[in-house]
Amino acid sequence: MKKKDNLPLNLREKNNSKISFIASVVVLVLLCLVFNQMDYNMIRKPAAEAKKAAEAQKKKEEDAQTAAPTVTTATVMAVGDNLVQPSLLQSGQYESGLWNYEHVFANMKSQIQAVDIAMINQETPFTSDHDLVSGTAPYATPTEIGDALVSAGFDVVSSATAFMDDNGYDFLSQTFDFWKNSHPEVTVLGIHETQEDADAIKTVEVNGIKIAFLNYTFPSSGNENTEKEYMIDIFDSQKVADAVQKAKAAADCVIFSANWGKTEEPMPTEYEKQWANFLMKNGVDVVIGTNPNVLQPFGYLTDDEGHNMLIYYSLGNFVSGQETLKQLLGGMANFTIQKTVTGDETSVKITDASITPLVMHYSYDTGDYSPYLLSDYTEDLASRHSVREIIGDEFSLENLQTKYDEIMSMNVTPSTQSDLLDVKFDSDGNMTDASGNYVEDTRSITSGQYYASLPSGQTGNNSDEGGYEYGNDSEE
Image (cartoon, rainbow, N blue to C red; front, side, top):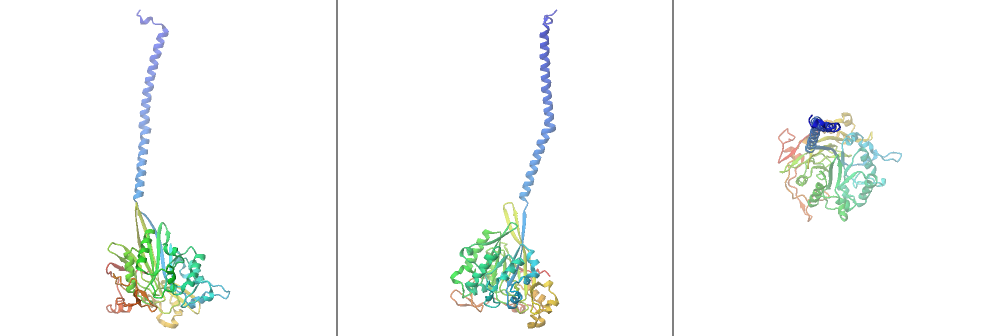
């Protein structure tokens, strides 16, 4: 018998157990390796790949979102002069002692409230004293008219006008008090109670678009408020240039309300055209003109750097009691401010610019005083307009439309001059220089002269001149 066969039984069992244990450990390790590999291939690797793919997709989506432009818009509507005259004043006075003028704006309320910003030019100062109310110069308009404007939906009111300037401090003070105490939510332009307010840029933010508003009127030789020059914003080339640059720094878009032009003249004057060119070169985005009491053309002005400025030279009267066909024909401006943000780049452009003809209706018999869309106006209403007592059948739907088409077809030759920017005006509308000497206007033409210069049978054209484009985009 061999020696190892003589090992004690318990020692053999121990060796066998050790071998079995080692074999079990080896098998277990092998199984762990197999299961680990299976777990990696079937679970962990796919999960890691899925996570990596998800992260890549998320980054791709974030990059795409960052690169994709974000576009926001704000819609703006503007109308011309709110000039409240005697007969209209009477229409809002009731036997009960109540004064209310909401009926004046009722026909236009849906258009006013359909936009993000609605603008109007308030020609005259307000008074809370009914004994001082006047519908002729010196004008003093009851504050109930202001209440009606706000009720209709107007939220930006330009006020730098010759009538504001002419009436002196007392009525301006009442106007400040009215807006401050009764309607602080309204953005009032062009007049200021304090120097601090005059130095501030008025802005409104809509849908993430910040809009700055400026409002200036032409300077008169006899300024009633020279002791407080900050109270009314008056055209001065350096002051306007500084204000525009300040506004551009504070906002995405600059809208400039300009009280300028010759009364009852549909063709813009050389003064208007010089200021228009000046404003365009300084970077204003939109100009809304008032004061002539009649419509003037609108369109775009473009400089060599590609900056476009939308300009409505005059929107005419919105509300008045005036007595000629062209004074009763007004316009409603509409446009959209479009802001595009792509990464760190922001751009703003003005789109969808149009003008819609309006007609101011009044009837002494029925007490109806209200502007209408010309498209909503009827022959029956026209036949009952009290102006027919003065101008007869000249006032008709056909003649209103014809006059509108004539005005909008005029091609306005731009001006690149600057010699009239800082002139003043006397009470007769004559221009004077800083020394008080009369400045002759040799470059302005009237609409009558313009029509006379056209070939027979032609009333105007829409051609482009000098990089300036004028269009007739009326809605009828």
